[in-house]
Image (cartoon, rainbow, N blue to C red; front, top):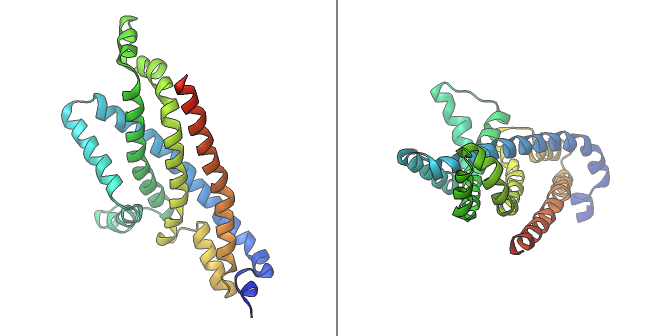
Length: 224
């Protein structure tokens, strides 16, 4: 048996495709949930760090530093295996979504904070002079200007989150990698893993290129 039959067995790949596609659907769903929840939480944390009372600002700093220092896998294992001792039992999908959201929120908070701080202070003063409240100022004046600085690095973080969904296989979630591993055992052939790798590239490579395009486009807009 040569390397082609071992790693690129077309018959095994054909039979494993339905299994891989089921895992792909779970991977995309997990990534979408983590990105939406993590982004929303990150925006909230950035506002707390910038404008909340000092004790809350320190808590936000500790949270962002801690979540950025811990590996995603460690956070996932703590949530899935440690929380049951406190009476909180989460499914593998929910545990993975929570872990990824918490980590992404820390990175998103730093990106959003930097974007808001890059907006000239005169914009805040002008909004105040017009009688706009804090939330109206953030929604209509500050965030629209900050977003062009936030989108490129945040898009890169979102790509990383989608890659990190593969860690959910550690807690037995039926994501793309877990399904590929099961298919490998079922067919006694590593070709399903190659198929999973191809699917990851098909999804992530366009997103990587999109991130580069966004960075170039928004940098040009900012320089104007």
